[in-house]
Structure formats: structure tokens, C-alpha cells
Amino acid sequence: MASLITFASPISRASFFPSKLTPCSLDSSPFSNNLGVSRNGSAFPQVGSLQIASAVTNPSQIQFSNETESAQISHVPILSCSEAIERLRTFREVLGSNQQFLAMYSSIFGGITTDPTAMVIPMDDHMVHRGHGVFDTAAIMDGYLYELDQHIDRFLRSAAMAKIKPPFDRESIRSILIQTVSASKCTTGSLRYWLSSGPGDFQLSPAGCPQSSLYAIVIKGQSPPCHKGVKVVTSSVPIKPPQFASVKSVNYLPNALLKMEAEENDAFVGIWLDEDGYIAEGPTMNVAFVSKEKELLMPQFDKILSGCTAKRVLTIAQGLVKEGKLKGIRVGNLTVEEGKQAVEMMLVGSGILVCPVVQWDDQVIGDGNEGPVTQTLFNLVVEDMKSGPATVRVPVPY
Image (cartoon, rainbow, N blue to C red):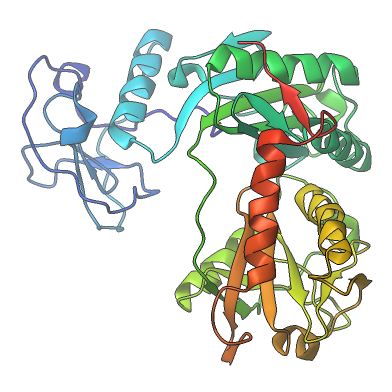
């Protein structure tokens, strides 16, 4: 979660929290990162590109602007703790989100909260100002956590590689995560969790951090996505070196730039190539192909993140080999030519499950339609999430 943000505002607290609401409209423009406040001759105070009505009791009536220029600040108030919390609560209400945060655990306050206002972490946490932290996720489907144990194993491997000693043992972490989902009452969504070297100071070394920190949050979700074919592009953003690409750390700047570059080119995501020019991965997902010879192909995991969903897909795909729908499965080095000449291409990850790709750069994949193997694997993963073995489904006691 983002760190605690307070408003730098030239307006009085009374004008920020009045008792009456002045209506205005809400469009779909994104919230600006500029949090400076200026009246700008407006009847409403403005927070960056966000116009706040004369009251903030109904977030649906707040107007957003596309302006990105920084505003001038004439006065910065000094806030009490209660005032800062109240403004943070209002910020959450005004900002809105297409995601709903249902519960958060923090080892800092040693418990679970269901109030989004309290879902914050300390600014001096080294995960915030140094990027010294790791994370992982697990899908929630029909009241079960999918591949929780597989994700926790990867989570702890990442922590070890980042030299972060967890504050609790594995079973305690597992129990905390399950209890957080239980408190959220969420039956379909996602669980995300972080291990940080912890708060303590603003130095580079975590030597001044008394203990590592564990955080977890439950995000309400929808039913599994119904994918249409997407376009991908080859990335110009350098791939992370294998030592860091194989760790699920919070340093996702290259991943974010990869995604943004794709969006600027009217594509869904970018595809990384490794230093030898072989196909690597996407920003938050693995990639796979079906060759003309009906062989399922996937890049090996030695230089990229070991995808839990990708590995599960490889296991599930063995059934398609037995049924004759695939002739084989190969994990290894794949050239761009092999990928672009495949009859099917797919993205594989816990957030998208199995998503068909119909175009890579200027090359149409196969006949330009969603492939049958891709669709079959998607359906099998969804079935696995709903009725798979106990090794991949952990019940949540609500």
C-alpha cells in the first residue's frame, strides 16, 4: 500500500470538511500525482488535478481534471494526528478506486484492519524509500485460496535472496494470510502480501531496522476474466539481470515502464527478450506458445521469475498430451522467430490466468484468432481453481 499522504493545502480545515455538498460530475480521468493545492480562482479547492467540492461526503460527485501542471502552494498547515487521519480518510473517499480493499494485516500494529484509511505503512520502512522488500499473491476463488502454499514458498525464497529474515515462521505467516482473508469476508478476489526489511531510519543499510515487517491486503475481485485476443510488442526497456528478475521484489519500475511502453503503442503488454535475444517474459506474466507441430513451448525459468501459474499450466497441459490435443511440451530457449511463427501465443499469470495473444509487433499470430489450446488451458485453470486437488486449494474459514 502507499505510504501515508497528507495534503499540503492553503485552505482551512473548516473549508475542507464542511457540512454541505456542492454537486459536480465525475469523469474517468486518472488522478494526478501532483498533490499541491491552489484555489486557481475556483470556488472549489484543488488537489493537484483533483477538484474537491465544498464537502467530501459523496465521492461519486467529485470532479477530476486532466491538468497535470503543478499548482502553487502559499501555505502549508500543521496538522494534528486526528486531522491528518481525517484528511487521509477524505482522500480515500475522493480518490475512489476500481479496486476495493477489504482487509489489511500489518505486523507494525499487530493485527487486521478493515478500514482502508488505516491501510498504510510507515514512510521510514525500507520497502518504501529503498525498495528493500519482496511480495507475492494468491487468487481467492469461491472461498478458497489458489496455490497459496506454492506462492508462499516462492515468497520465502525471494525473501532469502533479498536477505530479509521474516518476523514469523512459515506456518505463522500462512495462518496470518488465511485469517486476513477470513476477516475480509471476500470469497472472490486476490490476496497480496509483502515482506520488508522494516522501518527504522532512512539509511541504505537495514542495520538500523529492529525487525522485518509483514503486510497483507485483500482486494475484492470479479469472476475469472473472459479474454479476447490481445496485441503485444517487443520491449525496448532493458530486462532485469537474472539475479533480480528471479526475485519477486517490489522494484517494479522496469515492469511499469514496460507496460506503459506497450500502452503507448496500443498494445496490452510488452515482451522482454533476455541478453541473448531469447524470449523471456512479460511485465507480470509468463509467455507460452503452441507450435505448428502442436507442441506447447515455454521459456525456461533460469533467467526470469518462476511463475506459479505457468508451472501449473505445464502440469495441466500434460492431460492435453494424453488426449492427443498436444504432441508434447518443451521448456527451453525460444527464439523470437519461433514465437512469431507459432500458431498460438498466450500470456500466463495469476492475474490474467491464460490470455490469448493474436498479434506480436506487426506479426499476426496463427490465423489472428484466439487459439483452441489457449482457450482449453484457460478453462482448465478455472476448473482447477474451483474444484482442483487440495494441494492447490486452501479453504478459508469465514
